[in-house]
Length: 275
Image 1 (tube, rainbow, N blue to C red):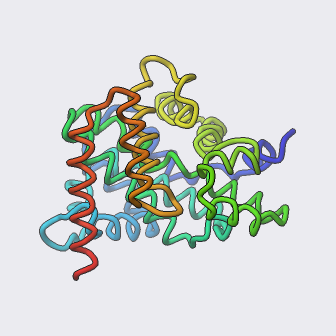
Image 2: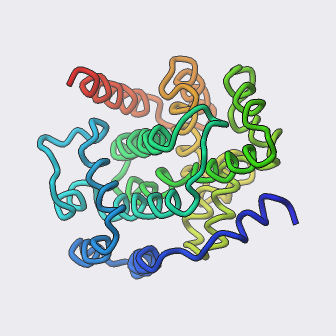
Image 3: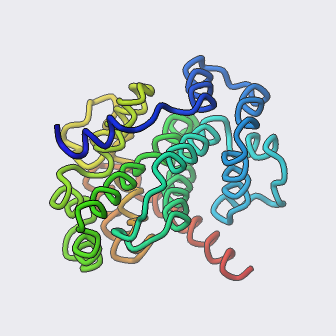
């Protein structure tokens, strides 16, 4: 058994709250009151939810002080993604020095991808935005496993040096050093926890687009473009935005809406710096 498979198999079961959330999501219910009653059992989720809701990335007009208002503003699916992300982070508690960041910077990186996808798909269709809100936030959770393996095998410095060089993509470094990319590992984590096949299929081939199932191809392409623009080593850096546009053009995606989404997100981040 590979080291990756053994790490995933050793993961503890999901907390009861997350299982409740997954069952709620599978039920197709959109009742915010039921969702709130579930997440209120987990203080970490509440704390993370309010922090995300009050970030400049989502540009709400006034401070969000209650879980109820956060759910109403962020939506049911995105709230579920935050809850899942918080739980995974709490389970793994990984040192992320291999990527040159700490856990707060990692969560901000996930938020950036989610915010970009949220804005971009919101310009395309409400249905697509709803379908991608969870995989957008969760697609790179696999980096927590990768960083743990790099640390355990004394590869932290070599890994960080290679991704910092910018000579190859982060995903190429992951495959070279560990054997799988973050998105592939994320999909395997979710298979282990028996989460939704739709969630897994949207994420699994983000770094191997040509292998994506036809019905999930556009979703995987959008996730790949967003992850490229928000690359963990230099989120929304000019080089990475240019690469994201290059990929979007190759995939036949709407460049105008992508450009508008990136401009909107950058304006929000600029406002955040000025506060």
